[in-house]
Amino acid sequence: MQKKQKNSTTVSDIILYINYIQQLSKKIEDQIQCVHKANKKVQQVRNELIMIIKKRKTLEKLKNKGQRAYEQKLMQDERKLMDEIATTRHVRKM
Image (cartoon, rainbow, N blue to C red; front, side, top):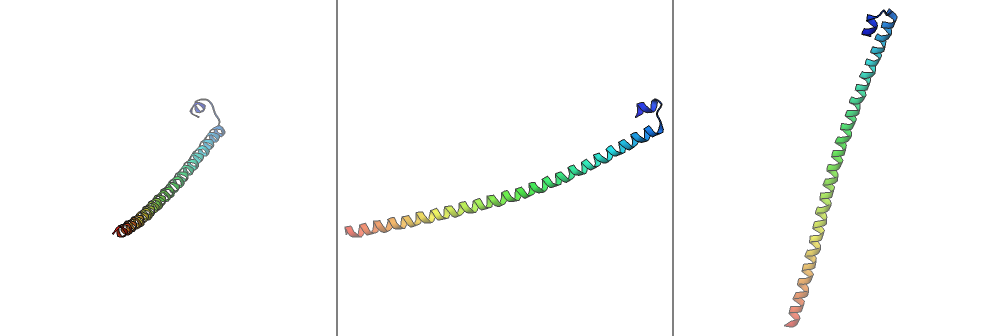
């Protein structure tokens, strides 16, 4: 536009350039707003994902804890059974 101003240009050409620049500025602002909205959405989804991962880990920990408790109960029952068998054998030998 500065080159055009140095040369002989009409007022209508300058108005066209100004309108074009204003239109580009508006598009840039709109695009910036779209980027901000997209960033907010990404952050929101990221936070939701973090919460889901935390819940999943908690459930896995509870599952593992329950599994360990179940296995310990089985081992305890097996030990009791083996003790009873040993006691019965010992009583028979007497």
